[in-house]
Image 1 (tube, rainbow, N blue to C red):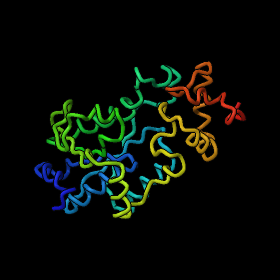
Image 2: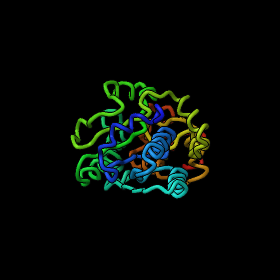
Image 3: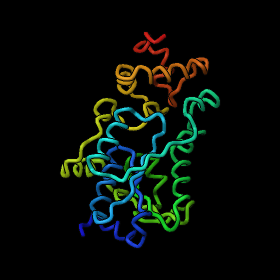
Amino acid sequence: MLKELEVFQEAEWIEPKNRFVFWSGGRDSTVALHLALRAWKETPPRVVFVDTGIILPETLEYVHSLAEQWNLNLTVLKPETDFWKRVKEKGFPIIKALWCRRLLKITPIRAFLEKEKGWKVQVLGIRRSESPVRRTAWYYEKPFMQHRKMPSTYNLLPILNWSKWRVEDYIRKHRIPLNPSYKIYGTSGCYFCPFVENERHYLALKRLHPELFQKIVEAERSKEGRTALVRKKLSPLLKQHLLEDWL
């Protein structure tokens, strides 16, 4: 077996029905998915996508299109929490209270895994070098380790030690279709994230999906003009001169 696929052998003892790839539609998780499909081609894994309710429309389209193209056994999870309703009740997520990731992603994933019986493995497209936060959070992790909070689940992290350049080289080598959201927005996840402060992202959102941009503006307005963004570079969006025609 090729070296890049060796880590998958460590999970061979886990029943195929309990092998899950958690896929976001981003570069890293798509490469992790492709590796899993190659490693377990005789018994393909189950693929899980979490629709947080604020995913970029282009990413949703990409996920469903590639799922059909690759004939994936895809499960779509949705959180019980409505993001915009929660914002109006509790305020925007901030660094000290980053509730969005917990309620929109972690909670539905854990609920899903807890319903599955027996030993499980979740394949994740985590890379240490992606950011200082990731490097710190995953410092002690190995490519195959038991989950600290879910003892019956193992994490399998096939690209944990990969660089961004290796990911991009893999995508080119295997001719993997890339999520169009990157070219449009520079990101691929949620259409609103308090950490995304790139003007390009919000200008593209306003142009292509004005109804979604308006949700951000309305939420800021409901909070008496408080910014939706963590570091306030574009804060608040509804007062920016480049977006002022929304006022």
